[in-house]
Image 1 (spheres, helix red, strand yellow):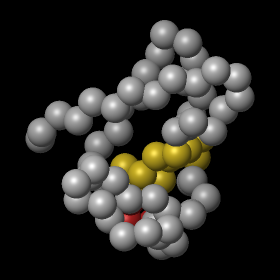
Image 2: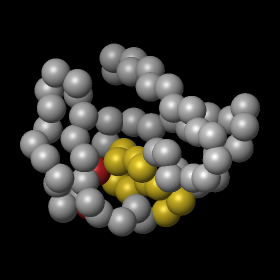
Image 3: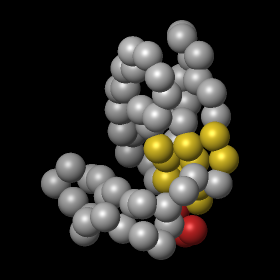
Length: 67
């Protein structure tokens, strides 16, 4: 997965979608993290992440917890 602080994202693809609570950017991530099978990553609202960038079969689950 790629990661950057949201504050560094400068190239939006579209407007923020409030209904789906999502926004896409074209910026290159600052760093990459390898998430192996049976592992997971936690991202906070100020984190921008790039999931589904690996190879092979990839599963993504999103759980949003109110802070």
